[in-house]
Length: 132
Image (cartoon, rainbow, N blue to C red; front, top):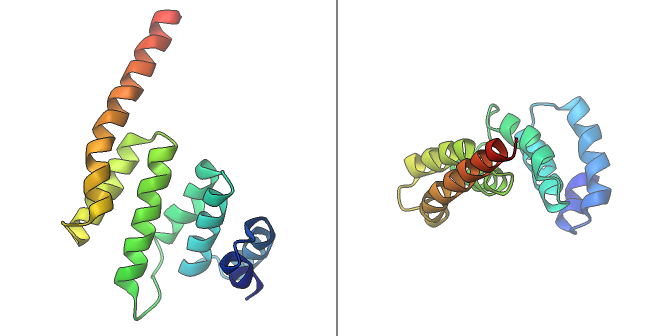
């Protein structure tokens, strides 16, 4: 409860230890995993945020609002994977979101951006090879 209260109050650095502790007792709790990912992302730890966010995909979302929970999780995964430059993972999450809702604005916007990210990644790889 403390983690949720601190998360809601935007006190991420204070919420994280409580989330970590709660996850020791409930490692398959969708909301705890989702909050941990969001907190890490908001703290600038996008790469670390992927661990709990991707695990949240493997557990059952809360009853009653499963579709909204899945949509929110996929949105977060789209944003985080794009930020860390993982075009393939981002494209996969975009595709999953578009399967749920073909008109989803974020997924449709990011679908175009993923192509740009892939080109950027290829250019970086080419430059690395040229420098070696």
